[in-house]
Image (tube, rainbow, N blue to C red; front, side, top):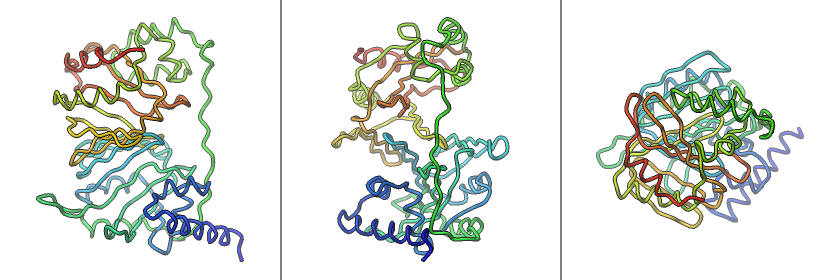
Length: 357
């Protein structure tokens, strides 16, 4: 027997064993338990209920509005955002592999296609019925984003099944391999914090005209984002208590204050804009459980939380950036604002009242 086929068969059997021992276990958790990536585990179900996709991902994404109402899920190890609604305005910039896209509407994302490696269509029978989705992964086999079809509920329409079937047919790979070769992704090195020109960095920080200038600035100085916040402490940044996030969301809900939440990974950044209503804590998870928007944040993964102030032509923009113990950003929070409009004073006061460290 081919060793690859044998390995895939062994992996599939191991997954079936975990599912039997722990009914309902999520594929992400099963992959972690088996020491493989989620894409490797999903690939073992190709020719069963999964279809391998290939082609120009920019063209596939531009067809997502055809699906109608769906659920878009984007996550990292510590935070999950889920939005229900249609994909609407999609603009692709540049060409592969460096192409990017902006998605605006009920589902809002920023897509970075250089991280997109594998794609699958999944039609899986579950205790709740048939679950159908498009799922995309990076080179390490880590999920970038998943798009789930929805059934009609109340006065809300369901997804377009014919459109889903057509997209899967048009992007179905010629070879339906049951294995996938993943590679470790290493982050580009940055300078040590004591090697960064702090004076020049803070001068450029103070001269920013737009929040989007920040990413270019830290690239210019080749500084780790968290290190930049440390260097700007007491001038543009300060730390708040980790428990502040629960206070932040509860206050935003009580005051009906519209906010923005950014969370994602190297291939997709999903964005929430609007008010939040139902805040619930369940075990280690801090949750927003609204009809068309859910957030699930692992509070026990939060190592530091920072208030970050960025000068713009519309005045100071105040954000909260949350990091894990490895220095990776988990999630960001802002007061809802549009270009040309100053930040709401109610948001600034809410943030300023959060307990500092």
